[in-house]
Length: 251
Ligand code: PGA
Image (cartoon, rainbow, N blue to C red; front, side, top):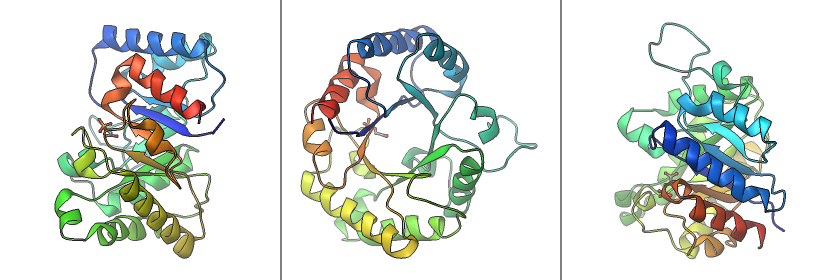
């Protein structure tokens, strides 16, 4: 057995009925399976409280995370959610997903504040990085990643290998059906691993995300330095998500 992290990012999908059905299907599916420890779903904020109660009452092994938090601890930020508000339901939070960088103008400065505020509440941030297609085509993948990682992590106090997770998600692979190849994933994960080790002396888990599905999960999860997968589309279908979990468990 391999202890990979399998994380499902539901994004802004599913009404309450469909969300509870999906949760039900996943947790029922997990009852027949062994006790894999690192299974996380990231539903919309609105479902976290009820999901947490459901998971606790059904003694499920499934864990919860949030898709975002605000960078301040509290205050006059209408419509926002703070780390302390999700602390009782979430062990993890996704920070700097490329959709948030693109549509909500997240900057290195706000991203590092979010990571710090998550850590201050003992929530593990899953810090997303990844190059756009134009970066890759102009051979700027490593440079882009360095610019996303170094200024952010250098602002974080008390970082350890255990209190942060990195997710490498090439933007061109997210939601496109076009996953990065094993070679591409392997060289980028090695680059990120070396960068973090050299500059900050940490070795966190590094997840891969971008069109991971039941057909390519085994190849992705057996790539060197891949600590697991962050899954979007395929996490919205219980059979696909459970299939990927089985793949991780049977490596
Ligand atoms: P995808 O999304 O699996 O649908 O490509 C991944 C992500 O956005 O985390």
